[in-house]
Structures are given as C-alpha cells and as structure tokens.
Length: 381
Image (cartoon, rainbow, N blue to C red; front, side, top):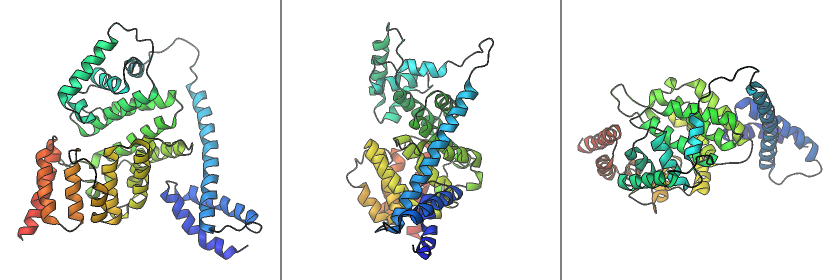
C-alpha cells in the first residue's frame, strides 16, 4: 500500500467532491471513508486510476450516509406532522386547488396555463411570455381549457409534475415580472414538499430558495438590473442559501436527477462562489449538459452557451450558440455578450442595441441600452 500516494490524492479528491456540491467537512469525511476502503482493497486489487477510484468510492460513501440521513429526516418529519388530538384547524386550500385545476382531461400545457390564470394571478400576456407564444394563442388555449372543464366534476386532481411546472412559472414571473408572486410560490412549494416525498419537489424548492436569496442584490434603487457578476454578494441571504443547498443535497443523494435539481445545482455553484471570478464555470457547463439531456430545452442550450463562453472563451460560446433559433428570447443579448467576450466590441454594441429594441421588460431594455452605449463610447475613445 502506497500511503504517500493516498496522502497526495486526498486534497484533489476533496476538491472534486466540493465541486459536486458537498461542503468541506462532508467531503473530508467521505474521503476518509474512501481511504479506509482503499487500504482494504488496493493491496489485492490495485486500481488503474487511483484518483478516479477514490473519487467514485468516496462519493458512494457520501451517498450512503446522505440516504440514511434523509430516511431519518423523513421519519422525524412524519412524527412532527402527525396532527394532535382535538378539533381540526383551518387549512389553506390553495395547494389542493392547484391540483384540481391540473385536471386529467386537460393536456399538461393547457392545465398549466389555466392554473396560472385562475390561481397564479398572472395575466394572459405574462403566461404567453413564459411559454414563448403570442398572447392571442395563449388566450385561445386558456379559453379552450375553460370549456373543457366546464361541467366536469373536479374530483380527479392532476399530477405533481403539472403542479410543479405551475409553481415554477409563478415563481419566475414573481421573481422577474410585474407581480410579486415569488414568496407565495415558495410557500406553496414548501407545503408540497411536506406532503409529497419526491426529489423534484425538493429540487424546485431548493432552486427557488437559492434564487430568492440573491433578490436583494439584483436591482439598483432606481430599479435597474445588476448583472450577477456585479452583484454585492454580501447582500445575499446566507440563511436561504444554506437551506437551499441542504435541501438540494438531500434531493441529489436520492440519485433521481430531474430538471429542477439540475437548475438548482447551477444556482448553488453561483451561490458558493465568493466572487464572480471564482465561479466554477466548468462544472456549471456539466450541469447544463445534464439539463439539456433531461429536457432538450432551447433555453437550457442558450444558458449553456453563456456558461461555455465563461469556461472556454467567447469563441467557444459562439460555437455552442450556433444552431439555436435566433428568434429565441435573449438570443441576441447572449450573442452580444459572447461577441464582446471574443474581442469584437463593434459587433457586440450593435447586437446589444438590437437586443434592447427586442426586450419587453423596461429594466432589461435599459440595461442592454447601457451596454451598447458603454461599448460605443469605448470605440469612439
């Protein structure tokens, strides 16, 4: 047994586990378990790739512990949620109504649209923007959904996936749009997490918490957008970040990856970076690869192109952008940013100005206009 080799590998393996989302203490404990296993196995069966072997075994040891902790946690929660004897208390029926609006007679897309309109507080225009379709198309979809369920007994609630999609879109609109619905979406997702034992429910809750933690730093006093790289990270809510990371780790430990967990993992990596320059873009690209594999979403591919541009340079980001539909929302803004990263300020300025003309949100339009003006001023100087 080469003890010197094991000692030399330990820091690198801990670093790999930390990049996967573990805190340092958990990574160190997992590696120690892996070292014990190495001492037992290697003398008779030495691995061809010692570092890879140790990473795999340490990660498996961590998952075993995490699963045991998750089981214990669920048992404790069931005990805590056991209703006390006595008269029943008033119950918030909002979440059951979400399930009832997601009726099996509707397609998932129509159920989501109807629920967003009827219960989510969103306008038809906001729902259309979330679905990337014209407002008239969405109005017809909602009208058809209303006609479909008219007179149908709402005694067959829809599935969890449809309700999760509704809550996700409500949160996104509350986070970035005109109506503040983010806190309500988080409240309902917390309720759902207490009722449904599903890793994607936990993944969505973690995603919401991690994004909501950054909210105080996202805008200036005048309402202007502050890009992630420029945000004051001391203004982020560290308690929400810690809760979001803990919820995500428990979900990932179940090894049933879904799109909300993958998005939350990206958000956790951003939250974990002390500065923008220290962001682990390589791992973020890997998570976007997972997200594209899971969903095939063009929006995920667009975000992946930005991450590739950060990890490997603007040219690589532009190559990743190739093949996507230029009419995709934010496509032009992303192209502008990647051209700027590639050392092409004139092209970037033109694209920023074009993206500003296409923007629906006033704050986004102002931000893109300022970006174009900044580059044009530098070119003139």
